[in-house]
Amino acid sequence: MAGGWGCPHEINDHCLKINNLPCDPGMKGCELYGRYRFADESKNTRYWEKKGRADMPKAAPDQPAKDGQPD
Image (tube, rainbow, N blue to C red):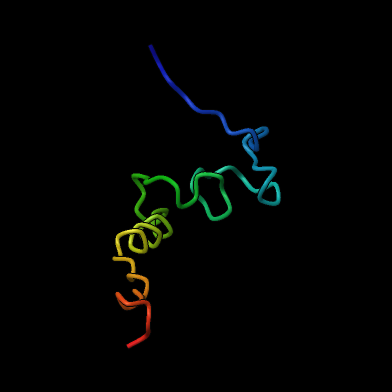
């Protein structure tokens, strides 16, 4: 059993989404850009930026005083 993925924007090895440039999965503007990791680390910069933001702790919202009055 084999698997595969076909891009709906690729026609005759060119990307219709990115100015008809030769298809290069993961290039900037590609559907896959920043969503997945590639063996070519030069295509992973956006992925790591997004991952870094997701790993940052979220700031806790300000909590009102127990009696409902501000401190």
